[in-house]
Image (cartoon, rainbow, N blue to C red; front, side):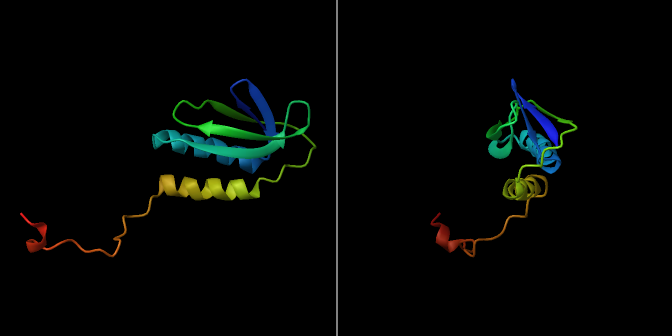
Length: 110
């Protein structure tokens, strides 16, 4: 488990979710874009929470280890989505043609 601190709030999430969140946040900033990520976790009082993070170039967040015996919250779907988006940001696919060819010179009506 890791403590994720964002603004003046802190919550506990699983190691994988915290690591992906920090890596994805950095990739979003490098790409000059923005996104939101919602994670399940435990609040400061130990209650179950869902937190939505707004990620952009100005995002400041930190993930630190903790010795918690609580079970990690299930963020499997969000982790999968962050991995996919991270891959798209760090290794974009080449441009694919849409099946429409370039017009001929005669078709340009010059």
